[in-house]
Image 1: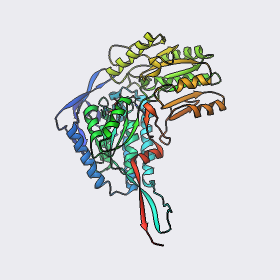
Image 2: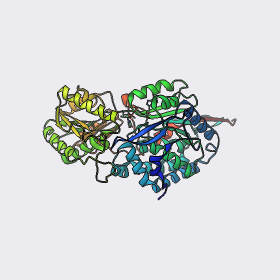
Image 3: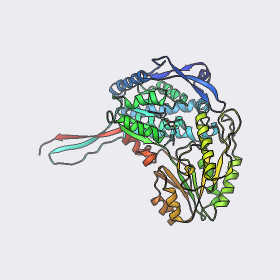
Image 4: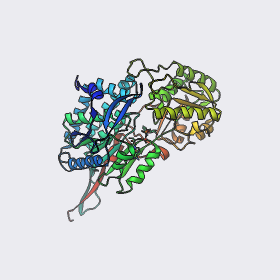
Length: 489
Ligand code: NAD
């Protein structure tokens, strides 16, 4: 088992920034605290990147891009990504624990879902690194004309707190496979695993400056990255409000931008579906990760003929969810990530009650310590209510009855978001009608929630634009260059 001091260091040290291959204090000397959401206690102190630090990180990323990294063979980049995967596997136990302590995610879920996804992402893009090809395009008889795909340069990656390791890797792995260099700005409430991944990348042999990690606050460190004139691309996952600010900031030097934002996804249940499976997946779809999932099935649309049955069974699932210490292997649901997030969720529960929705189960904070909220089910929700329109990002299901297909589609497509949707039916024709007519970047049929690095991921409207994963990510971090060689006739 490697990294033997990691967990001691978590508590003892101030975690420094990672710039140009070195752990450094913030230029200002400032630091901030990251808390354990299961207890509310301080977990660690972390150096707070400011404008100067972000500038240093971008300069080191630029130097690496122009230097060692830019000169490396693509297959060697792939081999380094595989080596990083090997080190993550070696330190799996500590990374799982660290992610859990910092984010409140249950260790069982990180081990089952996040870590395997991180490794899959790394191995997938490791294999892609030397397969980023151009084309010979026979445009003219008097010239050899072809394209090469070139890396964009320096990438600013800004990530949220709900899947720090996994979403971080969704950005880092393809960017590095393409030959870009990265400045990673983790969310201020979950900075620890990003720093550890940066250290492991150095141990794997990535040249200094290829991956820099600058924890700090969004308005300062994040904004500095977005505003920086020498950053070529910003890849962002977070809220629609910040997405809009990023787009404005990126206008300065016309950076390319990919935005993965929020959702208010519909999970639609028809009476001809396997109701057992639908209810189970609907519960997981909203309660997994304490509902802090951009594609959470937060609106459960149920045909009126099975509405009461589904509500009753969903409530039973909510009540039997094992809530507790995320470090316990048997815990299924941990706390919300922060006090702010807990208050936001409790406020929305209040709003739902005031709007006249029926609280079937849950609705309260659990315990005094930490930020636990009970899995909550509202029935009798109407489409225009705020709890049906706005992203809560917590374990709060809004169940809405519908009359027929048109009604279901009207409700499903009737929010500002467009990220994901699910439909449960035994009718293959209906399944196809819904995959066609649902406005969403991903549509699940008779399942809800899985993602795979091979499939494009992203949305439209308030859910953002652009796609991550698969080939799409290669296009995100490269650009074709047209070459024209005059051969004469
Ligand atoms: P957030 O937008 O507040 O923060 C995300 C990141 O942006 C953080 O690192 C933050 O420090 C940074 N940031 C904040 N202000 C900034 C600024 N002015 N300039 C640059 N960076 C800035 O979001 P959050 O609260 O951390 O995460 C929750 C949101 O993320 C939800 O809306 C959720 O739906 C969304 N999300 C989307 C996906 C997806 O794939 N579509 C995945 C996870 C989360």
